[in-house]
Image (cartoon, rainbow, N blue to C red; front, side, top):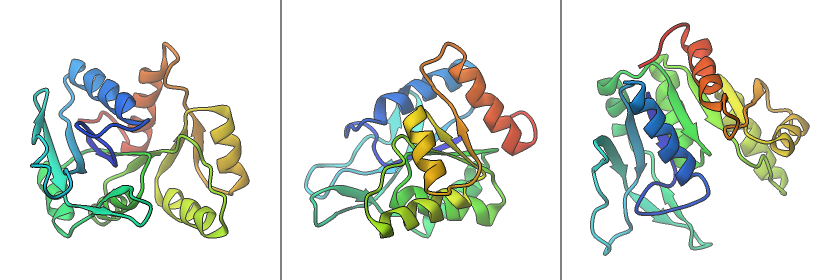
Length: 186
């Protein structure tokens, strides 16, 4: 399982805790996990390359006009995924880095599951980007009813309701992975 996330310790965002929880559950079930996440900005020192025993491949970051940090997908991303050979790529709230991971996974024929927490995008360009990115994932998981409704309103295909806080949430997620991978996943 390769997890591509826009935010990972030491940086924190709304999705960080759910990614850490997912990693813990996957490791507990003996799944092999690779995390691909942004590095620290220049001048802050390198972020950890191993987190709690899990390899973390770091990519450079770019500070946007709004001050937000964006992980930059690099051509090496294809080689990293090829070398790891995941059965599924999990895109946690994908942005620019997630899109690069999605493209690399598609080139390698690796299925993708993307999680979209909000489905919100006020601008026409934002809605088009949301549709474009999630329309290329094999499945998009909406962890709330409002997100599910917004994604449906934006005409995003292959959206499934997945509330991770349910006691069966993790098992359901594994079912989504198996469905796109066509069997057991690593």
